[in-house]
Length: 327
Image (cartoon, rainbow, N blue to C red; front, side, top):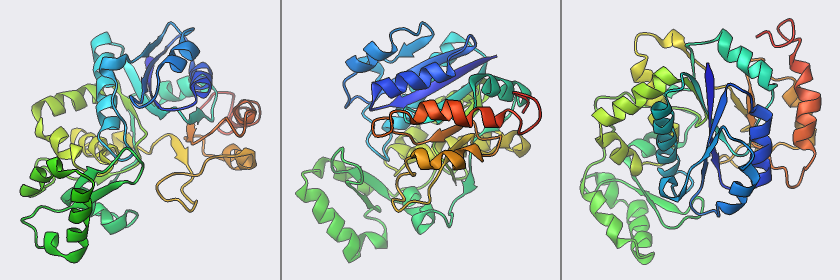
């Protein structure tokens, strides 16, 4: 069984290297996508020592604007590479600011014990935990005004009564004032979530069997309009994979389990999880044995934190379910 790690990185190459080193084993492969807005040279230098690592070149990289389609397209590119290579096992999607809260041996043992299961968080839409139930993501077009996080507008089709409300007309003026007129034609079409799918939402980060990821690629090949629809949706990475995984596993929901990545969303900024500090080590020690990874970390202000995770958090997991690495 091969564990294929897909890592979406945009900052701090030394931290990306430490993440790869913490997970690296004989049975692992790494596919690293660096945001096209970021220089790839420091990552090339940092990651050159890993022969089982593929760093996506310029022609395979995407511009990853927060909440945009770039993350989805980058993920699909890496899934195609895995399918072409033919390694069977698991595909784990991580951010460059994630880190394992279990040892690499524990992680391998976990996947071997749970082989065949998919790990992805999901809930039907509309959902109370999302603003407006998430319906704005389904029914409004998202148009980026710049690459800056949160600098976008969401507008309904001109065929919707909602379009003519003051709130939407004000956004339209903002759109025009920012010289985004070429984006306007999309508003002439009413936006509908594809009728062949049921909409679901959830966290971006997942671990899926290669059988499921191959079915995802086949599903997209057979429904090419899905990617077009998602390109104009807010945070498509939190809807597209969830909706497809639920469709693929329809009638066999027992196969789907919660995401293996822990994030603390109790902070003030609802658009970003809490960045862990040394004060969070007791919390990380107490995590369920079913959380293998956590996000997010920033090693620049806390250069020793990731080492402390390995020294203080990994050993505490050994006896949680019996002997070392039993899960």
